[in-house]
Figure 1 (cartoon, one colour):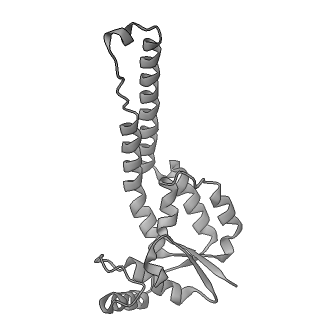
Figure 2 (spheres, rainbow, N blue to C red):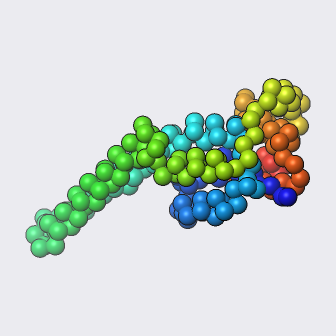
Figure 3 (spheres, one colour):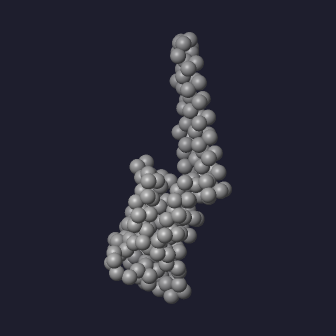
Length: 183
């Protein structure tokens, strides 16, 4: 059976992508028995989601801060007050959305992406990190054996790869936007 590994960055993209909808998780659930997930992937997702949520909340607030161009004559137009109200309303809604995202950082059970991710990994084949995989990943990093992340001091990608080699039986499809695995 061909297995599928989905890299951490793909799951984190649900916080950043303008096109990927949460309904993609429904398709993933339907294929869960074929999906492999490593302990390292889960740890990376849990560790990085908060920073992405904080950035997302900040960007929502920043983009809602519309400065109205005005002159004395523009302020006299009947539509001006409506324009100001609309701006203020949009700012209030953005503030509430940002606050909700910040709540997600404190209570992961309210985070829609996190909830879907956690539910999915319950059904997937979970590969624990072994001491052997850590040793091999460290060696891979030291000798520059792909896949490796040359600009990083950690062995996350190397550890994922070694865990997959250890735990995957049969063919493997890697879904990632990280070019590390292409080599």
